[in-house]
Length: 227
Image (cartoon, rainbow, N blue to C red; front, side, top):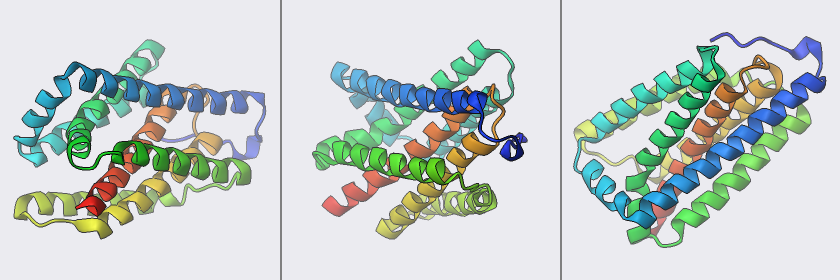
């Protein structure tokens, strides 16, 4: 999807409303994610989901999640119908919630307190990164190519890890936290400079995906440090 640049148009009321809507939707998405996780764990459903997913080939789970996530993102960015855009965002939040269940289950069993700490670190990190972009108004679109190739390399390493059975280790987690931080900078920059002003749902979805990625690897790191 091509993003319409607004750098030469300034940041008028319409753009500021778009930015506000995007981050309001991001906040709502994060709250919905937390609410779903609480419901899954309080009801006891999470344990069954975790045990089932942990018994499946991890490559199958990653492949299914990647495909469904791409479809949801594509829909939110291209479909004109606002209700369908919201449905895509809701579907993506639900998918992320299910994907996180095994990680939260392991953390709850073997690293008490790690989930809350990871959440706090992720929120503070996200706020700091967003503030950097918003206050400086610097365009981080140059990160796009780096993120594309870095993401492909990370995916290749994850696939090789699953196939050959080696652990990626703490260093990989740290690098991926940095990768997620760069993605948040890139997405925030696109929100401020490039996204069409009617695509706040899709913009919020992209930001939510990057924040979720950071949470995943921060939590992985904290669990690893407990071992």
